[in-house]
Image (cartoon, rainbow, N blue to C red):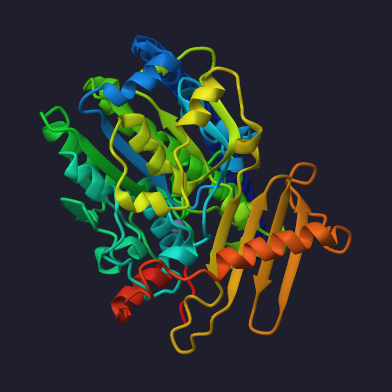
Length: 498
Ligand SMILES: [Zn+2]
């Protein structure tokens, strides 16, 4: 009996096992079907959204190169500046990436202006943003260490726009651009929005980051301002500093590229593309895009072991300095928009906007490193590109050890792009190295030609050193000791501060 019983039991349990296996199988099939259906549904929804967007774009008035020139005489054109932190240009389908990470920006850039060879001026947020805002290279702003404050003498675009009668609003989540570091200059409202729990259930996040908020709060705060004030008499300058790409944040619908660290980065770009779509969709509905210039840019890129290391803020190779610059005008351009293939830099963004909008540039700009790219835009619109613009130099700088509180040592890493060449000087505690790449035939920066092209190396080194060793124009910046709470917030973003 015992054995029969046990046999029965075993047979029972065998049936139970088989039954539960079936149920598991049915469950797995159901989950797969739902997932497949879900992916199709998401794909379908995304195609629908794209089609809808294309239809909406058609309702936008069309414009020409002449209309771009005439913008300078138009009154009260708003400026929306969207900074997507840590966004590499070559990971965007708007820049030719094979994965469709930016379907919305791709469509929009086809009716706007896309700068094809754009460079950021550093590979970490504070140094890069200080340059972007002021149009001076990092060595000239002097803002290169973790505790440096952008001097009051710097003229921020928000100050220029405020003097022109604009409302000026800045919304950020990155502690490096906090007002204590001098980044609130000229903003009537400069705020880190209150974080809520709203979107957490669907949110995936960089497992190494402790920070659990996302850009939804920035979007909500920005839209709330525009809903109330967007159409008021005064024009506005609105700056949104988005962080979801920096933090590898995305939702289920954007998780379509795989599960590696690098795939997650792509997913967060797709998620951010949707965020931008939602934001601009509202502006379109409210009729605001007909009177707004939109700029999309980034402060630096991100490395994925191209040379054995990940992240940013340590090197200046192409993966951390080639960033996007896309402009949308208050009208759509025909024939695929304008692609500017001459070299451009983040320091050129605001001089270009002033020129385009007929705003007198601040006197400080006369000495600046950045220039207006309006002539390049108009030349590209008319099918003419000047060879000089193509050869324009680009410089980026990084103070190695900028996050070391205990032991400040001056160690300048810098890169110089000029003509067909790209020079990188890397300085660590123990050694310095230099590399030379052919920017045209070797855009990935893989074959070091420093031993073969010594005359080019020497001239690039000498020009690079000149820019790296220049004195800050406003003197050595004041510093501010950051407290433990702030330190931990910055560490939560993945920064190594010792
Ligand atoms: Zn950044």
